[in-house]
Image 1: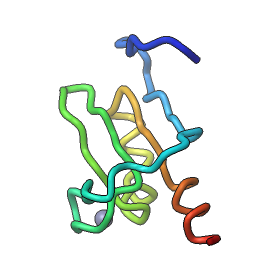
Image 2: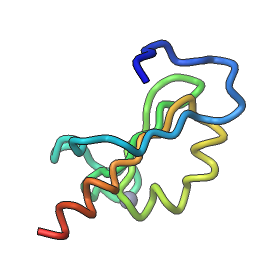
Image 3: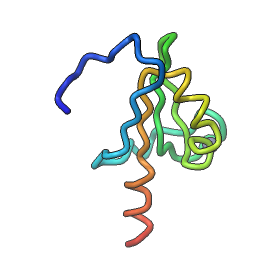
Length: 82
Ligand SMILES: [Zn+2]
């Protein structure tokens, strides 16, 4: 998908899981401070970062309240396999 504009009228967030590179190591979960493996771009503006644990915990709410949810946990799984 090459579209860069974020659709504003979607009922649910666009969930992106086919990311190649993880978030920067300096990005931290807004709840617990662990390394972030997910990012939610909120409808009301701004973005939240989540670790894998909190991303899963809040996933349904995030999808309902965000325009886009990026799930980087597939990169985490690859890293753990090494
Ligand atoms: Zn967390």
